Length: 245
Image (cartoon, rainbow, N blue to C red; front, side, top):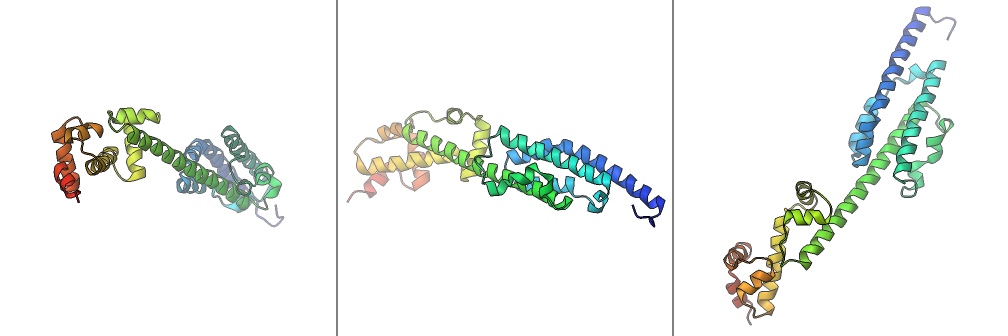
């Protein structure tokens, strides 16, 4: 405190600091929402909320009480990230340059309050980005697994319930996820696969139309013919005839 500083100004600044500290303590209870954004790879949402919660007037934390509270905030944030990464075993998966563990463990590694806040924001963003990439990889693996099943067992029933069960997801969720990732519905992909195989069989074998229909998973020959014509512009027989030399 400066000798020339009016006492009323000191009281006002202390009051502001007290209010700011209490608000920040209450915001620390919203780490569950920040954690949800990290888990779901929602990087932009995480950054926006983190900045909203922890952007403060730095000058308020220049006195003794403010510095002690800065330490409190540092260790609570540090504990959150340390627990998060330990539980999910992320220390091995993430690039060490993204973590900069020494900055997570020691407040002395930060030159200022703002630098500390920036570090923890960037760390959360890096974790969200990592989780987002992993989710895409896992989703692509699931879709590849379902596609492989469809190609192997095209002649069998291929209900949404059965295919979702292969990757242990609920049918509605898997249907939405599939369309989000591929841009088409699951039934559309199945029918495309059926028509592709039917065209191959029509060109390379002399099997009857109803046999081919059964082999691609459609027991009704009339329905197969309608679907084939809708997709290709030809009936199965017309397509077979057009492929003859």
